[in-house]
Length: 238
Image (cartoon, rainbow, N blue to C red; front, side, top):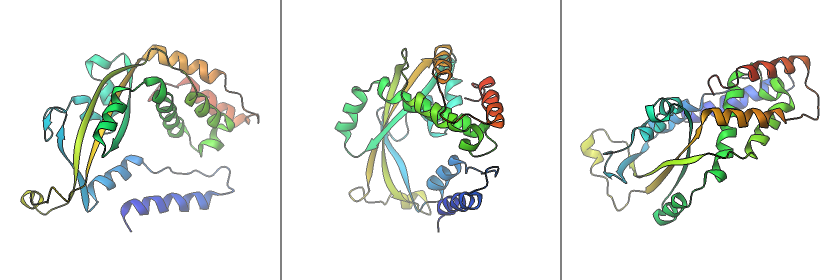
């Protein structure tokens, strides 16, 4: 069993153990650890062999490097983006022309609502001591749905970038890695589109959307307190 399988099994065991226990604390595994298992512990890895700026990893923009480090706030700390929230839409596959067409025709209106909802979901989960549905009641699902259906005018595509990777077996030495037969190695392209939106504008839109969320079942006193806490610090660590 792989380490990733162990992490998944742990989540299942925790969920089963907590079933029926309304006040039980559920520890959500850190997805970045699973990503690390996939990248570092696999018998195979995807090696960058080319990008739109040339062979190997030459000329990869700083925002792309920070994205692969799973560091959105690091991207937003770059001087040209400090007054903006950043989101990255990703598409991958073997059909380069189709992916290029996707990037050329990309519209933030299609992908940004889901990306905003995902980011808020992470915020609400990280702020919760319990399982989110217990912590916030129906308000949690209502917020995610409203944000997913929302409109975010003013969003813009900053840049797009593509990379080509080959699937290789992890070798003992770099020399062994170079002996991989290029005709038998699997290949994929990854296209990234960087979306930006003004911070103040997005915060105002999110507050307006969330103010319209109404739960069919009234939240408990504890849930109201949790909702108020997260609303008061809504964009801290967002």
